[in-house]
Image (spheres, rainbow over the protein chains, first blue to last red):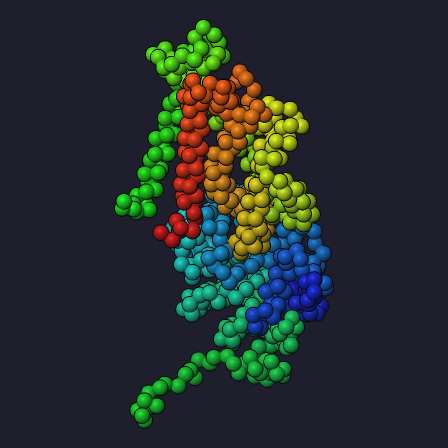
Length: 266
Length: 278
């Protein structure tokens, strides 16, 4: 087990947002966390890096490689963040500081985690950019000069730069068009094969789950209603909510019926 | 009259502001380099003289050269205003950033102090402080700094509060950057534009404040040349020599107007969103 979340509860002053959730991710797993907006998936993922807003309280244990992340001091957790656990977000435009060049993001990130030689940082960053199919020239651009797909690939390159053990991908394709989204996910899958990292993949898109996930958990109103291997759940869903979700998902090939027949008849 | 397009109007404004600015720089330089008269030298036999080659703007009630005093007064007024402004910014900005980013007890404590200051109008707080400390220009500056830093801290805090929720800050934190780095490298450049704009708009206000306080005798003390104090000095001679009041008055109006123009211009320039869109 690389990460196990044990009975984690997140609450605000008057509401329980995540209720006694437990799940565990194995090494090299692509673990999908599926659920509607507002089901608490993102907050759960943010609690892994102690990133929750201060008004929310967390209980329970999040054990990452034998250490409880929730009881770590601010200094200790900072060493985990970025280096061992990396995040990729949905909002690619907002993921980069607008007035800093792409390269500055890489430099700063590597510097904080102990790469002191400037040349080495540059080489490593360019290598990372090229590994996600981007040119070196992007290094000197500002975030708003890049397209959404490019930015999201930069985000992946940045997240995987220090070969973390766990990558948390929070709805990373939601804001992209389907072609760019597909390319980004292919890239992520390829990088996962290369580095062997685990991925906690938060999504509400069943197509991605079908295609990439090894195991998955379904979350509703702050609780996990069902979890297990992908095929087990997709083929034999137990919980009503899971059945409902699967039924509601669009399936390729069986799209909307053409209106031509109707037209011909008329 | 046909209304000028906005862009044209703006460039005229900026042009005027720059011309004024250059003019002021030259005059200040003049006061330094070609100063012929001692601004403090009284000459009771030559008091209240009219314009002449020797005294381009005449002499005041103690026979001192008005132009010299006006220019030197400009140095004082603008210089002290800038000093007060810079000090207020230097104190206010770090407070605002830390308070807005760290939240918690520091923030709550700071907010109470700020609310206390903001409950009273600037002028009243300044009057009370100067009254307590005794009337002098340095006490006035101190009072202005004490009154103004809160505004900057508040502005910065509110900007930081909204910025800190954004994902790039979240990402920076997730990437393990220390708080100090996030505040200086990621938040500071974002707010400095807002601070610049507010500061340039404030400069005029501070100039007015210093002049007003000097006028009522709570700021610059005689014989120091200061525009507000000069206004007050020439008050008894208003009927016989109105120009003695008009010169410093005009100087105050022009400089305040100029700083406001610059402020407006900067506000437009620093509108980051507009720039990205165009």
